Length: 334
Image 1 (cartoon, helix red, strand yellow):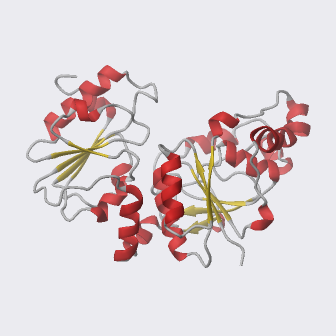
Image 2 (cartoon, one colour; image 1 turned 135 degrees about the vertical axis):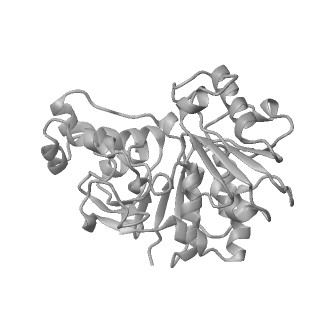
Image 3 (cartoon, rainbow, N blue to C red; image 1 turned 45 degrees about the horizontal axis):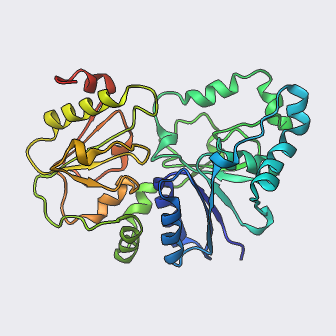
């Protein structure tokens, strides 16, 4: 039987695909983007689980891209240039005939474009928890479809189309078919509930995931503990580092009092929260927060975040508080 191939760009996506590997008929393979923090360490841990036939790391930043300028150059040479950039100059290749199915969460990436360059059909998975069920109208898809001659782009493969619009996307996974809001016909969607997959994990599978993502022992008992989950607004150019530090300090003072403080930073957030909160337990930022749903023998009294979807799949807190960025910036002391 042919194996499946999983392509991951975030620790959360790795968590989802390890859960899929538990159900796979034969050991799948994984390509792990180097944008995942400490990807080399995580790759070795993934290989050590015995779940995967192989794990490769792809450095998209070092590979770069080969976009062509002009209508004719794009139509005639984009696919050839894109493949040559990855295969000849970077030294990476995929044999589509080797795999039963290819799963990718971010098809707007270098690897996603490479699949389109080679004409390899893939299954598009949710980038984050229930992202296909989000409110807001999915503006990136709407804007893409407003491009000039969109129908011709899709029919003739001119340039690249993302987020499920490429004509060879086999299906688009959704947390819930009834709750999906993405602008695709229902027959294009396949229900694949991450929440159900997490709930179905056995004790042994949970222990494997803890060994995969936890780099240090966690406290056994912290009654009344409060969890602060950050988002990196600096990298998104929505604020500066000094303001962000003051903001999270104010959020903690306002909403995280009453028990021991735990801090879980977003994987891209490189701020030194151990220095900002010297008395807090600072968790590994590369760990998906969903692992805390089963990694701790206690529940948090409260989990707090600022303008993030991280709490949608978080179930280890009695109370969940989600502030907007404007609300957080308006707190005293910011």
